[in-house]
Length: 101
Figure 1 (tube, rainbow, N blue to C red):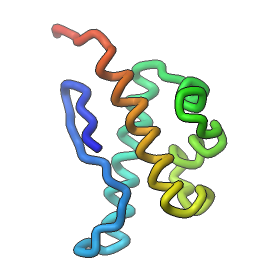
Figure 2 (cartoon, helix red, strand yellow):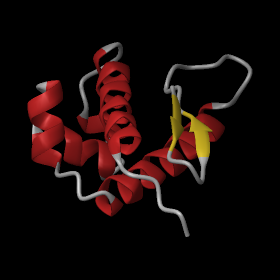
Figure 3 (tube, one colour):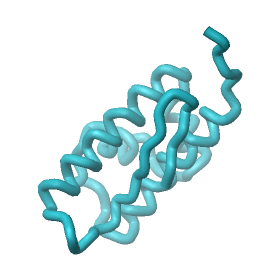
């Protein structure tokens, strides 16, 4: 999943890649979730709005943002939750008017 807000772009793929260690994957995923959380807040996107769109409970969305992956359901649902979270933020960012600063 690619997220592009005009000033930054990154790839989010929570699936396991055999060539990387779990620690490296976790660190990468953690930094991307933290960035998504900042972007979500910067565009005033409420977790309730994401929950309504995705049908993922706000409790589970808080677990994603709180990096409490162990409290999420196991894969493939965990992966799906994270991907849906990212997609909603990406769609909202695309609808935001671009700043001309």
